[in-house]
Amino acid sequence: MKKTTKQKNEEAENRALAKIAEMPEPDRAIAERIHEIIKATAPDLTPRLWYGMPAYSKDGQVICFFQNAQKFKTRYSTLGFNENANLDEGNMWPTAFALKELGPDEEARVMELVKRAVS
Image (cartoon, rainbow, N blue to C red):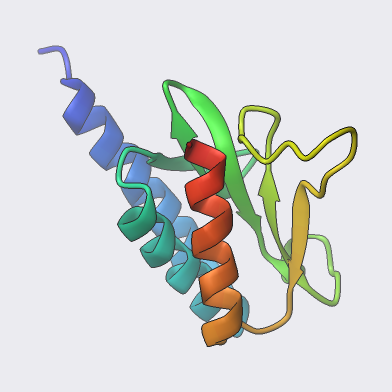
């Protein structure tokens, strides 16, 4: 029996959530909150894995992703945006943001970026 798109999306989200659950703290807490923010801010984005990282796509194209610090042994996690994100500002704009902690100010910035990315 062929799986529906909804079933495929649920399975993809479960894989992304399982990857988040494997992350050490504090990356796990940040990734969990990023996931919640993206789901609430842009419910049309589909969670999935992309190169082993939690990512969020629209029409099959990755818009943004979360890279935990431990993955590449860096001092910060990264919230990154791909070329399909609508973040363009003139001839130069950021496509990745370092995250060491996720407080109210950072959460508001993530919401703003995600809204712009999918607009």
